[in-house]
Length: 361
Image 1 (cartoon, rainbow, N blue to C red):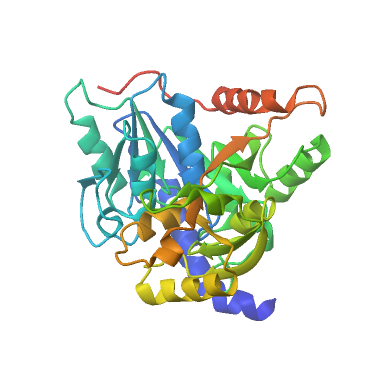
Image 2 (cartoon, rainbow, N blue to C red; image 1 turned 90 degrees about the vertical axis):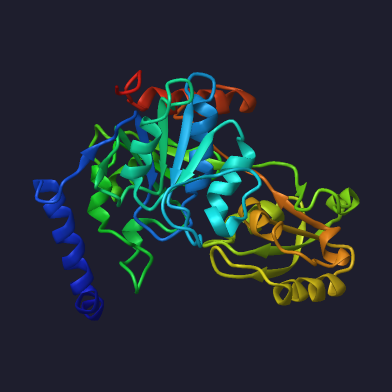
């Protein structure tokens, strides 16, 4: 619409000039001091960055010494900080804390300056220095130049049907996807025929040399948010109250609905800082649905664990659903058994990622 273009013109101009200056070298980019993979997007939330980062950890954990660098969105601390499993989410961010708790052997650090964080990792002693850094949400952080960039696009809200902030959810120009070394369309379901893969490539206007992959969500068995208080009998309920404080709760509702009837949804904004007042809304929903389990996301669980005083009527039935991102391989339908597809997808992913084989000295 013409009025949209007028409203968005100043922001569009700023983004275009910024990218132009980086492309021409007026604004400097610096190579990563360690082999690195950037995982990012051009939208505000909801593309599945954390599951994608975790997928890369599973892909390389047997062959690489991995570190994850994140900004630590919403944290109250500043500067460089190493994440530990006992940290409060307000000090490091909920997503870095989730990754550290899920993969305690991985070094996770937070810093608004990705370049400074990577330099600090590179300065570590050889016995602990990582030889692969995964940069979480760093596609717009152009001051650091990674070895390989992966851009995620949500199938539920394609960038070619979206608008720039504040009208839409795009935080960068759609043509910036072409800077990526790989694009993954996330939150897909089932087999993807060649014709649909081609339609996505054409709609995204990708060059033929940019790998285009597709991923789906694997939902794992529910786990108690507060292990010592969870009553596993609620997992076998037929109904669920969904509690979510994320950018896009459609995927969690979809995952819950495969096994449960969603009786009610209690939703908050992304990275919501839960209070006992919020929990009282959940308690009210529980009283309306006394046999229901309360299901939330793994990211929400990191914040809920830090909240003291959750009443037993909620904590006993409060569970989160772990998820994993899996590549849906480009294979002939029906050629492989369903249980063979994840391994084929991992191999497709690894084959298309090109990174240095050893640390930069």
